[in-house]
Length: 295
Image (cartoon, rainbow, N blue to C red):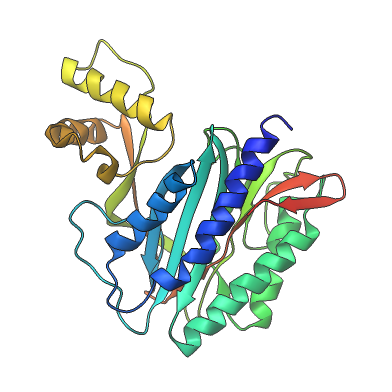
């Protein structure tokens, strides 16, 4: 495939960063410190974060990245998901892991890791996404935990993190099949058996993505300048306000773009009944008779 060397490099760096994360995570550690260290490690390897490092605690399944000035720390007895991506010239490796210091968290962690392994085993060109979802769901059920049915994996294309096909975590789908030479992130999410198995949007939003990729006569000069800055820096990929901290004067203008729907704001995704969630994720490149695990 085109860009294979870049994709493999992104995966190599993602693996190295992933291996360093468990030592960063522990009770009392600042979420902001962890996120910035993960992103710094990616840059030290000569790559770019594909999106802000997510650090999602307990019932927060995804989409929390510490904003500027976040003073929160990791509590004891928690389930921590660290989700990050590495970009090399727009080719993305996306991966996540769960770290916990609780017994029930360990059950969830092992369940999603085993579900991920089971899903990877069925991946090959022509396989229905519902078969991948069935592998995830059946494995999770063996552990007595519940999949998050409205969270999915996703196809990845260059400079496009969520492109095309979704990979369910339950035995469902629209008949879509995996295609040879395409890249997908497979990411089982699970909660305890008494949870709803469903997430809902909860404010605040801490991750953003530019919807408008070019200046418009309908925008003010300040808005058009900011649109160009965001587009030049992030090329359509998600970003954090931390990554605009050198431009504090643009925050009010940025909020105007959000209110007008020109910048998409991603709220946290929280388990509907407040039960803890675990996550595991790998990026795979589909081949005729299997796949390559990039991360």
